[in-house]
Length: 183
Image (cartoon, rainbow, N blue to C red; front, side):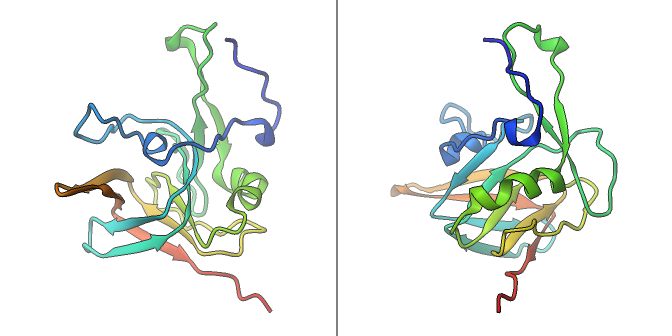
């Protein structure tokens, strides 16, 4: 099927997906897929954010997770990240496909508030190679969590209780942009 014309950020596909598929998990593979470039969002009961540098771990309960792909050769901005949306087009050979590039700040400004809704937190599963300091988008009054460096997703499963699988996102460091002070 040919790719539809995309004329605005609002028209970019950003589907709600199963959390494990969204983060690139495949039951047939034991190691993380370091080339995964999927995108979308999911609501998860809880996940753990782990810092590679300090070993600190933080559980975030009931967040909306945005899985996004940063541009491999994107500019180094102090407060933003270039996103790449690779959209499959059956009419174009894979080697000729091109990504749609959008600034994270613009994407979040246009899409985040409606997708976050009444969730208690937003987690960006997004590599941030230049450690940009991100701001919470307009209309999102809940804490937002984002990382420095590469983000790698893991599923921790206890041998005796596979139903209690825990998603863990590991990055160099995690930041929290706290809740707005609503008066």
